[in-house]
Length: 368
Image (cartoon, one colour):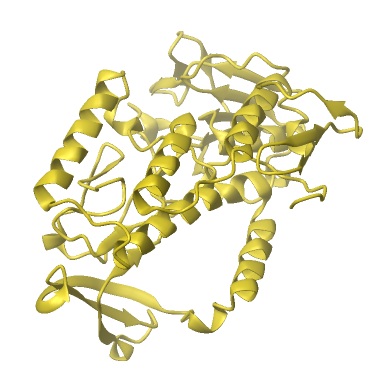
């Protein structure tokens, strides 16, 4: 990246939503090749069960029995024992559909962004798109390009920048009437061809043994020390559950911290101390007005979180340009939703970067 122009789209929660699946795949393939880890990956394998086992000479007295198969023939199941397990199954698999009174009465097409592939099938149609996160904004832009009539329904502050042609905003859908009409929070109504949910995903860990005690309630996975490990089973690490983050730098920091735990660079507190840390952290977030369902939504707090893990683990923090780029990109998006994804960023050193607009013109950085 250094001294090279690159099309960097920074403010990502779902990387694939921002940069395109093919670009993410290329990045991961190059990563595998650069670090020579491809031969250590076992493809076409399903993890069926992860079960803790008490082992006298195990790390923290634990080991893990992991059962895998090829997902087609049960007779292929194999159980192997490991000292530690990192769960990296992500959270973009099981679509979340919020409960909306009368939804079953809607007579058009109901779908989730998980099954959205391209804008062409929606050409000329009317679409109510619920959710104005990154996926919602991306899809609204694409639908506009095929002359779809889009109502961007969301509960955030109204977007102030210019919207794509054919796109308007409204409050969230509050209910579906008996005749299939959608009613919004302000009392206005619409009867679209398509009701498209861009409402995120559920966390799911069907392979984890129940005795691990990891619970998912109201979009919070708990109890997890530093959003990573259950205090009672500190050789299990659940990576990447935080939302509204810049993914790969975030994963890098979490992985570095895990390695510092495993190699002894960071000595874990006792189970009781970790549980108290979780309790105090969640309470502090709720005191600041953060609802339970948003505790894992770090956004601007991700940088302090990343720095804390680096400090505890005794490894190098992320270069300062990451946070400034991320926060600046949010400003660019709010002011120029139609073009911000075409901006080109150039990283000069660990602190400095510059940006060019769609026509190659230099742009002022919005934040110091």
